[in-house]
Length: 229
Ligand SMILES: NC(=O)c1ccc[n+]([C@@H]2O[C@H](COP(=O)([O-])OP(=O)(O)OC[C@H]3O[C@@H](n4cnc5c(N)ncnc54)[C@H](OP(=O)(O)O)[C@@H]3O)[C@@H](O)[C@H]2O)c1
Image (cartoon, rainbow, N blue to C red; front, side, top):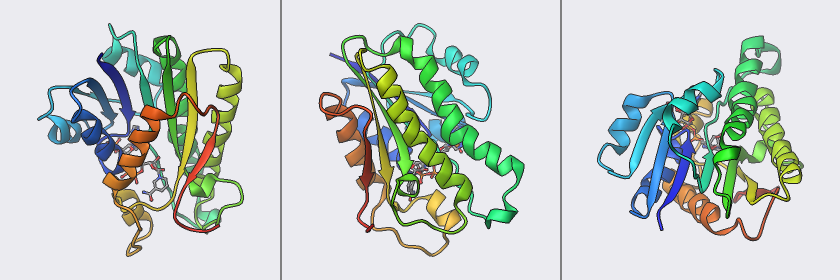
């Protein structure tokens, strides 16, 4: 039976690899979303089971999503992968930086979930939030990431709160706190840093997790990292 997957933040990096992996399975229909629709079409134009749509999480999302998802009533997997990383000394972080970080990494995700709750498959569905090791309690912290890592910690907290509020529903939500992956985001924030994983390696883990773990976990914050602590 065909399944519907939505990936937010699919134009590059890990999200692009997630869509490429899922699209290889013709039983899946994938909605690949990000701001840069041209890039999405260039990435996925060759797949007949991928629909590309433009969404900006810094604006109210419900109206944008309803244009794309009119007529779609059953979503099996939602992967909230979009993220904004600002790396600046604490005292240089502007009001706009804080606002945009929380808008993309937290508020945009919560509004996206609000939109999709009535559309999630009433038999079983899985929402996977992509957070960071920087937002995982007790992990190693990095100077310059106050706006980013606190917002990713808030995303972890949202996962626990949603799972509690919807524990009697058929929707499962979990949160993956990723360690370093070699993407444009990492290269822009930490030039020259070499990550131990490539986007397609991390995408393989995320897709497998999203497909297979909804029966076993709910509201869990899971570190996905090779580094310690
Ligand atoms: N790479 C790492 O080392 C690492 C480590 C820990 C966690 N993560 C997390 O993993 C996720 C993917 O990271 P990545 O490294 O692949 O990042 P990336 O290369 O910067 O890709 C981020 C994606 O998010 C989309 N996006 C950004 N702002 C958006 C907005 N306002 N509205 C809608 N979409 C937006 C971007 O597309 P557009 O620009 O087209 O909108 C892009 O597709 C992020 O949540 C990140 O925080 C990454």
